[in-house]
Image (cartoon, rainbow, N blue to C red; front, side):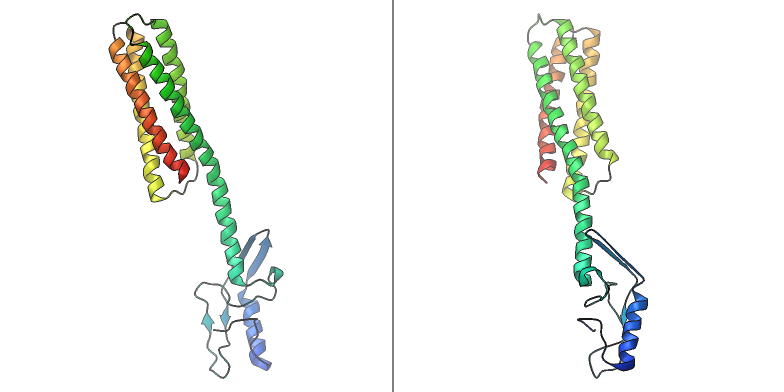
Length: 224
């Protein structure tokens, strides 16, 4: 296959090569770091002294340099810049999701702290029912926020590795468990704090432990 600048020798052969190049590059544009080429180039020129046989670049591009390309760059460099631009855009979009994941870690930490305080308060048989219910209501807000963050990440166009997909599924499962533990605890508190003190305390302790486990999983997503 011909390489280097698009030239095919002299006379008719050269004209045919130039015509092939002109007709096959159907559209091209340059915008910042993005280059796009549509169509394929078939070179009618092989090595000097050999029979002329149409050859197509398997990649769909053109070997050598394109005379009318921006800055006279090789198609290899042009496609490299295209991929670089696309990759940069993907990373930039994903960075926003990482920020949400970081907020999820903070919410999980808040839930762990609040649930641990409830469990600690319920160690005493004289725990104030009103105070316990107030703390549970505050915890409800943190659980709702965590669920909203998960939904925000889910609504995005994510491309995750196999490992990250597994961790993300774990995050969703653990958030669901947090919601179940919290809902049960709140139901018992609404009925009678004093009567269900031990059960509420157990649920609060379980919630704190699961929030801690959730932080560990979220941390893996942040590091990946």
